[in-house]
Amino acid sequence: MSDTRAPTHVNLADKLDSFSEHWSPKIVARYNDNEVRLVKTSGEWVWHKHDETDELFLILDGEFDMDFRDRTVTVKAGELLIVPRGTEHRPAARRGEVKLLLIDPNDTPNTGNKETATQAVEL
Image (tube, rainbow, N blue to C red; front, side, top):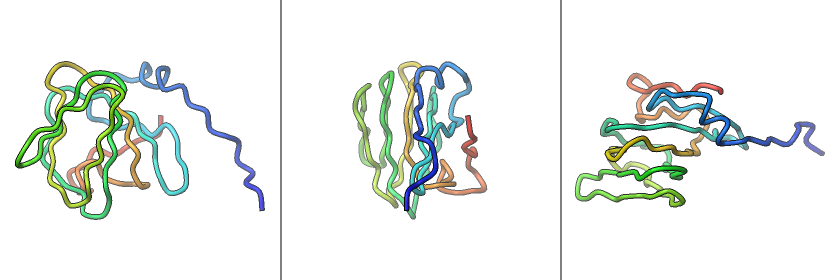
């Protein structure tokens, strides 16, 4: 059985140019049961963890820190970081704005908790 959907083609630069708010993920594509999200960051986010899923951060532009309780990992443009499920972490953009691509299961709250999350929205 063939899929009747058209292929998805996304220009990431155009999508990133279309919004300016920080820490507000935008869904730019979906595949299988996942959302491809773009987000701009500046400053520190909140300490949190995701009990049900790993989290993937692909740095498109800038230099990004991921704080863990015992260390900080710096991730640069063109690099990615996967945070294992259940690992407490705090994302931070301390040296200016950072642009990221995230891949998360559908409806995953960005704080690991629906009550405190910024809901990802379609762009």
